[in-house]
Image 1: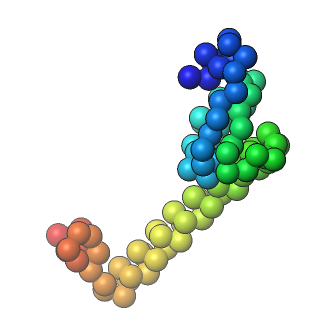
Image 2 (image 1 turned 45 degrees about the vertical axis):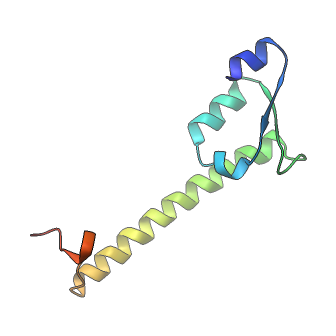
Length: 91
């Protein structure tokens, strides 16, 4: 996809950057490919801002994961059933 844009000197149009920004590898490859791209939902976005948003998105995802694990551990300590349909995974 990006390679064709680069060869033909086209601009890749992205409708909603917030859906794509969480894909760190894709964004990194896109920026490294030097393909011109524009996000329709924010036309003034620079490559530096895209990099910052990608890093923040990755950090947020890690924080969510940590909080989820901590909450499940705390619930397990309190004796709350976990797993599908309230079945405990321990058996």
